[in-house]
Length: 297
Length: 312
Image 1 (tube, each protein chain N blue to C red):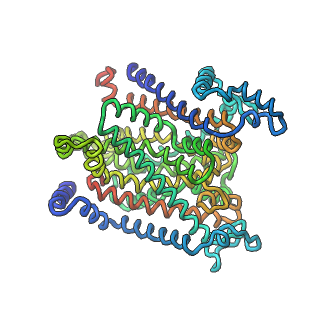
Image 2 (image 1 turned 45 degrees about the vertical axis):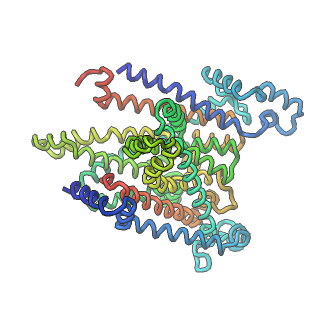
Image 3 (image 1 turned 180 degrees about the horizontal axis):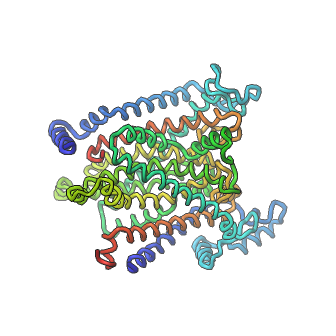
């Protein structure tokens, strides 16, 4: 009964409005989506505050041992760390690393993976076979190990961290987008474009790619959260953003030495990661349900 | 059935070769002078040069790779540049810790997530279902090392129930394994739930109901068995994540497994050890994937039929 009702709604909607308007409407009706938007807005505001109002030299890295390991107070809402630095300022300043790495790695891997997936799916045959067998090999290497190998070869810094995470993500996106392309390729509008003499590049760019966009956006939103966790994990291991820079994973690594008597050093940076990733996952889940309501069980 | 297993094993060979090429190429990019690392700062330039020469450091990459693989097939992964100990021995020494951790993780995950997943599927949209959805959301957003620290804080440092760091006794493994499994429970539980809901809609379940089979029997005999197939595959695939994740978990809890061995090797630029650890873990992952694949073929009658097993 429920299933039939949903199907009717969809047909109606498709007749009256465009696909994206429809997705938008379903998205805004979702309570979880609104919660995710709110959380993400707060995080972006916090990040902007850090960019404009927090000074790296005096508020982020300057040590003041006389006030070290203070518990949360009015002056230092999240307390101070082992070097007497204000944890709240460091978390706000540090949000830029997670957001920058998460979004850059996701966009880069989507672009590369998307290109590979489009080419493999569109041309099929030998090209598809070669590209996808190559991707199979990459998928067979656990992504954390791949990232560790890349960072150990190139050295630990933020750019190499982004490269490492991107390489690990590409095969997954290539697979998803390839299967999306396969389902689009046989549509009549593609055939029509071939018939009027459209070039391969033109067809991929104007007909195939825009139609994979829905799948892409959902994957990307969930991917950013995953990448933020991966980046903080590698920084925690000392293979990413290095202390004294206040990347959240690096802060946790520094804080762990004081875990027994000053647990606030590890609680707040961890909460920052969880809230950021939670916001992105809520958005991703809501987008997925909005793009394809039949997926919702 | 034998044909199916043989085919899977043969298909794995090019993948393993591919993995070794990629990993060897990436890790070979590591800058550094092995002779200097082995002989130390005091050694003369000539001695360092001679050492590099004998290691084949100046050979072109394909030659080096070929030699490495030739030794690998004989079970020799080279020796550590730092300690001079054979890489395969170091790995053999550390592997039991990682293997026990991974096994405990998988067992705990299965024991916690499958019954929960079935339960929330049967009681769809109940209070329990909603609570578990929120719990799953939060856990999916949690980095493993942070959850590990919280577990350590609560169960080891505050309640003094379990040891905080080390890997000397079985008690040392409980918190790390629990940390790793709690993170997969969220995912596997959701998967079991949606797989169950999918199966419950199938015709054969309706047929069973129409025949008057008890609800209990329908769920456990007919639905769960079919719903578990994709769940098992995911758990097998997660094993790679477990191996990668063990680097982080072992670091949090200061355990001496392959993960921490790899990390020490990376920090000291000990290329043969890094290479050996990464290759060993990737190969292990591939073998586990293969075993899951084969067991899937044994469980699923459709695959069995395709390869001329007993027709049922």
